[in-house]
Amino acid sequence: MSVSENLQIIQSNITRACDKVNRQPAEITIIGITKYVDVEKTKELYDVGITNLGENRPEGLLHKITNIDEEVSWHFVGTLQSRKVKDVLGHVSAIHSLDRVSIAKEINKRASTVMDCFVQVNVSEEDAKHGLKVDEVVSFIEQLQAYELVRVVGLMTMAPNTDDKSAIRSVFRRLAEVREEVQQQRYPHAPCEFLSMGMSNDYEIAIEEGATHIRVGSKLVGN
Ligand SMILES: *Cc1c(COP(=O)(O)O)cnc(C)c1O
Image (cartoon, rainbow, N blue to C red; front, side, top):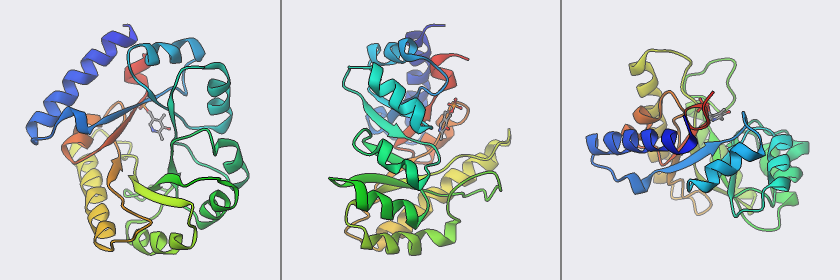
């Protein structure tokens, strides 16, 4: 199927999920994840109106940016090493994987303007996943106050790798609760309004639980 057909299906699923919980599709930003595809296919996403795109590796991001002239808001969604921070700064509108002070320090040292970041939370506590534990999030964000060029715009998580929809749902629900806790602190550097959660297999559940940014790869580009 074409990207445009895939997008139509996703949009109607988004509408249905929104209807269930009284939300508006306009509240949801689709980030098209382009890590599986080449520059040509990436341009197809842009052509159907997806202007928020995401990559999970600095090399992939830089390759796409170098070869795509269109006005894209790039999101960095993968694990970031401190020494790679300088490669992505200036190219991305948001980093979705902040989970270490060393990364914040490096952003602060290298950035020329405020960098919007999502703090990554490992709600399901699977060993293979990056991110903070739920009970570490508030104190971590408090520490980020020291880095004036880091702004925490939201939280990000990945659902557990399971077919158990209720387990997935409870992870997303927990992330929304953690966002409440962070918002209650009223940190000027951490408005934390957004929830980056939901991928190809679980974005509808994520939307029902409050996602503002869904990161969709395979179901959009085909696999
Ligand atoms: C690959 C990736 C996605 C997209 O995954 P799909 O299941 O293909 O939609 C979303 N978020 C992150 C962090 C990823 O690495």
